[in-house]
Length: 139
Length: 305
Image 1: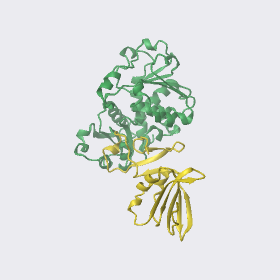
Image 2 (image 1 turned 90 degrees about the horizontal axis):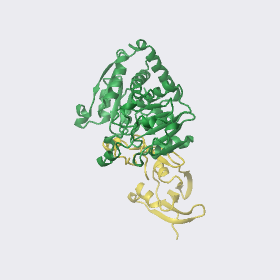
Image 3 (image 1 turned 90 degrees about the vertical axis):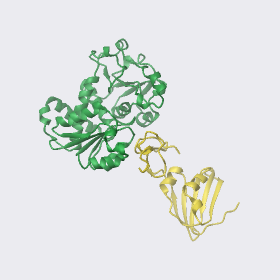
Image 4 (image 1 turned 45 degrees about the horizontal axis):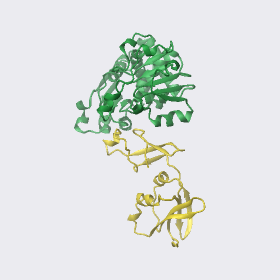
């Protein structure tokens, strides 16, 4: 199966197999005007299987969100057909405005204008907790 | 400007300083009787709690300061739908320091960001209650003169008991401490307390269902009330309420220098027959709480003797 090269845009590589569609939705790639290719379960010597997303247009990406969802992702920036930047995602210290605290006793459950914010408390097990009530975030 | 929302906001050195201040205050209360003259403490209690509020107010009055505030949400603008952020921002214009209790977890975080004055968490739902822990620590210190090497038993509602979570967080920072969690299956200590506080420091702990099986090994027995307001289902509350009651008979195998503690109020989880036992320290805790709150108010207001 052949997906064409892109001239100017972004390639999200090394996405954990099966997570590509989640990332497509969270980054709202359906709202772009350009060509977007989601390749699922591509063969990878390193990962066995992986997902890849190719976006045929330059765009700003929230690396914290991406790092939270799948820290193994590599973001390649393409200009004039060449990779000009390769960035390895990592778990962000904070995730702001993306997740919602599910603790019914949390202050955010009644004061909904508060910014939802989570902090990384256990890097090894990728645990994030609500900064208000310490409730664990679930992906 | 600094707020205290969780006991771990205070370093071990700061805890030592607070304990030293409290002990000095106990020895010479007159020395402290004017140190907060002209300062105002606002007690914002969105949830009723007579003893904690009175303890804060007594502490401030004994420092020569003044107090203002409300004792339930219905007598505040919260009843009109005002947010915690707005309420505390307004009160921050009137007071020099705020002590706040709120039924929702994390409400003091919001207050601390907006008030413009120091905020002390006086209990937020089932989450944190750092000044109760200060009272607990002073009680342990005054009876043992160390925190190291103690075996601490915690009994009752360990799931919703915020005082338990805060005390585990505080004591887990001392060397040689062991924990014994005594509770029914339904009210076990939350897993995050174990994974966040105990396992990273390799602190030994065990979970049991009866106090009799561990009584001889305990240096501290921390009893808690099974709180009805923390349950979604009343039938569960009634079924578990009377499960763990401390009696003189159960204490026959306990150490001579055991410290029996309870954050109060108790319902019936400690028989009144235990009150005369010299090991019963729960009313000492009340007094110690006032002195530690006074020491904390002084620290946050940066007042020195």
